[in-house]
Length: 467
Ligand code: ARG
Image (cartoon, rainbow, N blue to C red; front, side, top):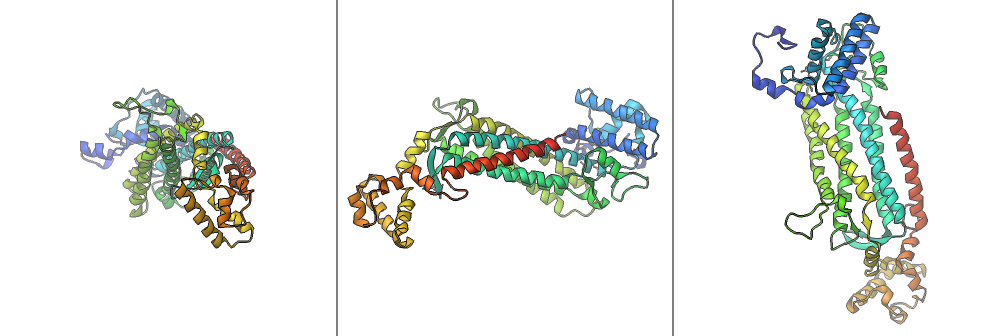
């Protein structure tokens, strides 16, 4: 007999059980569910809604059920639809009919919203921690490559040289925004829906604040209809996750390119690559490719959830059960990617000389020649044209700017003097950009310092919010 079987005259069709049950996936919420129930039962007894004695029996029973689920000693059955009813059934099996008092003043609607909020809080902290690990591995590689110079690109055409450290720091700041987005949305997750009942609250004199405090919520959802209908916090988590995935995917794309024979800028450690079943010479950047490839499923979960929610009337609708699999899959997908990323970055071999050659055998110092002329009071547009002609001349002779003798430079402008050879070296070019956030050595070191401070703040936030 179903826990809600009273008003029914027939058993549920087997296919309906199979179709509507969520236990296959929401068993993942067992710990959160029991945590919420323990707080609820304590609140009930504290407010004399059930006796202290009954509350104690129920709490003890819940802890036993938790233990048994953890050790796989009990069967979670589709006959009981979801984790909430399975736990209640197991509790009643454990302690007898008094277990039936647990659900006093509560509905599965506020219960499932509570479980998802507790789960999302934990996931938010976990993903933040993994992001910090990636930030630290990037920062460490950046520090080791302060003097490594490679071409910077626009349109994937060599543009101006940059320090490899500078390039990696761009990702450190992307992941910083990701951590900040997570900690910001945490505030909106951290509100307790418990006590909203099915939709309208409850007739029992419950103390919502008491239960919320027990569960370390920062506040309580102010409207019972909203409390049971709101899945914005899941949408926000998936949206944050989509941005994280997109950032990871861009870095993956670069790692795939850099490790190709065409670029040959890095070599990923053997431990993070795989081979080919046919071509013995192959070493493939599979991890980076797969992280890039899995971005689509994370975006997909975001769109699924937004679409699922958009037509729902207040308050709870069964559709909302569909919030879970996408959420869980997103957490698993990100967890897997981020955990691999930190060591993959730390262990990659940076081919500094190849990067440098790509800068030398190129015209990425052309802007600097134009700026040199501008400093001698030639209007930038004219300087641009002069340098364009010099570059064309070089291309025709299969030479680069630093290969030209001074006499040839001077055919284009008398203002070019012998010091041009110091101005156009890769080192001089990156150091010439001495503005906040640019490539000069001191400016990149400033970024290290700023990032270190931000990473420390991230760690403090994580410490306070870890359960
Ligand atoms: N399994 C349901 C879910 O995940 C739990 C809430 C069900 N509530 C209900 N009234 N049917 O959304």
